[in-house]
Length: 119
Image (tube, rainbow, N blue to C red; front, top):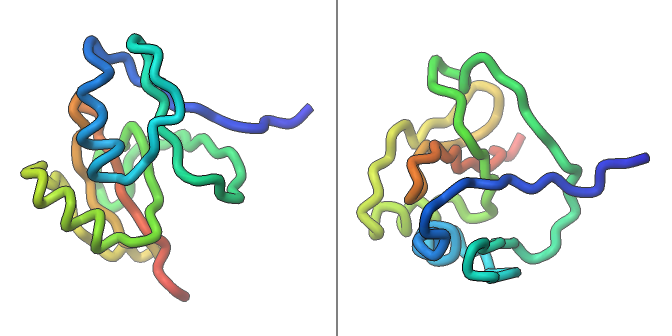
């Protein structure tokens, strides 16, 4: 038996409110829209399913609800700022090799936007 995929499910009274953040800011595509559920997806990438269990978020921060790795960190940061979203932490180059910032999605979930730094 092998885990093929892990999907984050976020309870929200109005799922359509997610479009600004997840589609327009992060560039995810709507893969499914049933009205009561919106599923966003990136183009297919090769990655292993992961789940992290943590007592803190690193560097003394809160544990984020989601961590989203992006390929163009500066572009996403610019879109977050243009959308008027509050950055709650960072941008910060962390000692473990990631550059990241925290922002909240429309439902109050703390999202860690990150990129792995070249080594």
